[in-house]
Image 1 (cartoon, rainbow, N blue to C red):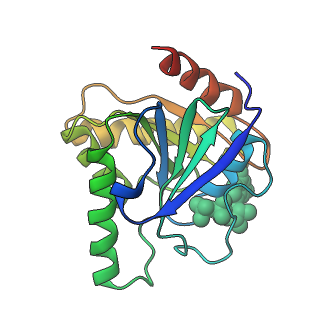
Image 2: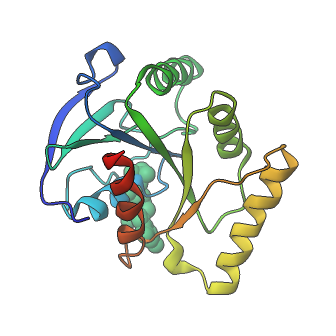
Length: 198
Ligand code: GDP
């Protein structure tokens, strides 16, 4: 699958204002600065669809993009930004929660993690919560061009270990990507295509 057209639809903080859930939808989320905007731009082949920000944590809105008039790509705000107040963090958690549980057309959530760092509690807890609610998700390793293949395998093994410790039997699929080296685009789009056709 190739993306021919990507159109910004709406930015909002209120899930009742999201587009009608009448098309398959895929959400992208991760810690601030994980490389989410860069990945979205790579997937869509657009340089500035999602803004690459020097200021992590700035986008606290849900952005809907309509792809080839057939599915929605949703850019969720980055979490775990230290300089955000507790009240804002709570507001954020409520917004994300209502989004994740309130979209019947959400077919998969892509949870981005920086492949160069050890599995973080914040990310593992986020995934655990998704699992508990039965929200389908996969893991996306970002910035993998920085890792040699041994280190990459190691990073995968560390996630598997940690998730097994938390009680997971089946570990979700891990996509290996790099926006800088243009890696992982085909794999992610090939994963989305059959879901769109179901
Ligand atoms: P976001 O905050 O998650 O949307 O992350 P951005 O896409 O804005 O990227 C955060 C920082 O990581 C920026 O400095 C990017 O240039 C850098 N970055 C993003 N993708 C990659 C990648 O594939 N490899 C490397 N080395 N850096 C990346």
